[in-house]
Amino acid sequence: MTSSDAGTTAPREQTSDRLAQLLFLERVQERDLARTRRWVEDEKRRRAEHARGLAARPEPPQWLLEVGLTGRSAVYVHAGTCHMAGKRSRPINADQARDALYHGPVPPCPHCRPDTALRLA
Image 1: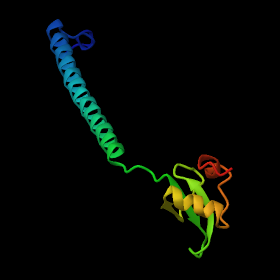
Image 2: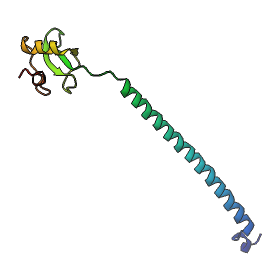
Image 3: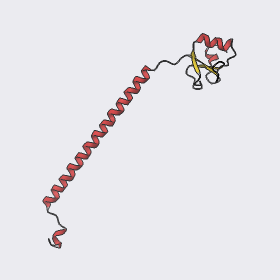
Image 4: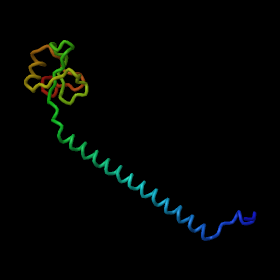
């Protein structure tokens, strides 16, 4: 091979190299597309599971009684959806909430104001 032949490639070799590159690119893109389709299916499955979970979630209680650290003394009466209700809260019905607010020494939560909702204030 001479120095003048080293820099040139025959047209037939260029065509087969280009075809090989294009076929390789096609395989890579098909693999990427398959992966993207799996991601789409996974996301659809996650959303469906989330929707089923929300549908199966029980309704929150209407009223909560938050108790102190000892579990004996009541701290606040909350509306069932109050974001300030602590972990030591237990569900109560409307009559129990009215009784705790009106007759007992339990103050209403200053954030959700259950006394207003129960028409005691």
